[in-house]
Length: 193
Image (cartoon, rainbow, N blue to C red; front, side, top):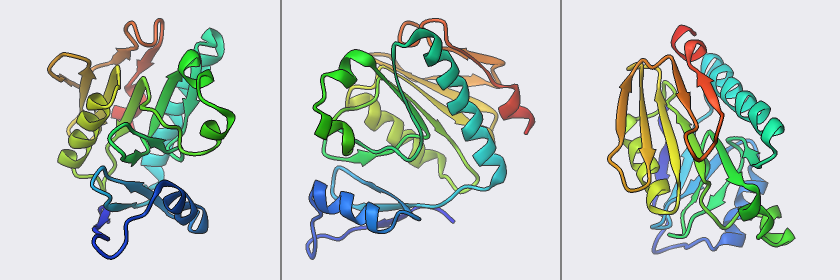
């Protein structure tokens, strides 16, 4: 099943609080909201994709525990981007300084910022063009580094500020560059599962 996009306008336009309440009322579903106000219902992933996502997040968490330089988020966390969209990458990281500049109330809700780093992992149900547009949206809203990992085509697209995306065919590893210094992600578990 691919994502379902509902255009609720002109009947309903969900503000941030209403959208958050919708998410709470239907915690068994995953929602995003586009900058145009469209409601996106994101399907669950299968076992292999869930394992891959868990591996990515756990490796990012382990690196972050050593550096204590930021906060790691799972795919359940939503971010209210500057363009008004509320998006949820498969894994995300925000520098500690930016996180601590938020009020406690802002930290409890959908954080009103774009992550510094985000990973989107293409599942069997994802359209690659939708994920590419989402990565560009992150970049346009303040993302510093992003990886779109595509196991189906065995490619990774790297998104950086002020640069064209870089497409890598079956890289063995990725590094966090100056955004996540010292973070290296081996990709054998992605290509072999």
